[in-house]
Image (cartoon, rainbow, N blue to C red; front, side):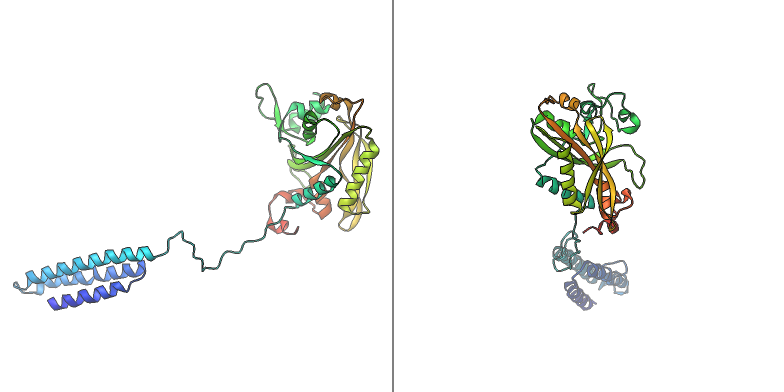
Length: 332
């Protein structure tokens, strides 16, 4: 029986040396050292040995058990060192394909508009989206009694330090900030998000984008304004595009007009209302310290979503903000 134990030890160690994975190690341990393993069976066979053989057999059995346990621990450490880590990268495994990104349809529209006005000498100006009453209303000649200041038309915030703030409702605030810090002549466009508590439907959203332009110089007139808009229309929509101005009213311009552009919509030329414009009101110049006797200016505002929807035939403004890749991939 001592010889049998010697054979058991040799065979078990040979099998252990061939294990390569944690699963193989677990199988070896169960077969040799587990509750139902071969060593457990040998311990039960001690009862079959004679009284004289039992001490030597028990000693040898303990030696074999100890040898197998030490060998198992050593082999388990070797396998653990050679096994790949859970966070390791297998450089031979095929990678996950990365889809090519593309500009959002609104970004494409804004970039195109900025490019056209940039070629006409307009620089890009920026300003905060959280504004105060002065820049959003007062400096723009909007009186306190005007409906545009009503809580139902604005996202008002808590008063802080005696100043009421709100999410800006127009990028005209950037025009005011630019005139406060930059003496004329100047020519800028301001593009960014604006906020109004509108109910979401096919043509309204509580957040949208505006691009407003401002030019201040000596001797500017409505003719310069219409020429600028016409040049933009033909560069952006095609050489057959036209512009017409319809009389309107805005507190910050005088005279004021609505902007209609004749553009292609789904292959057909149509008149589309895109925004408002006019000559800068002298009261606005006075609020920023510009001499209205010397300087004149014109301003215009265009809805970016409105232009994108007409240009690309998009019937619902909500589609622009749903982040549905099936929709966005249409605009390469």
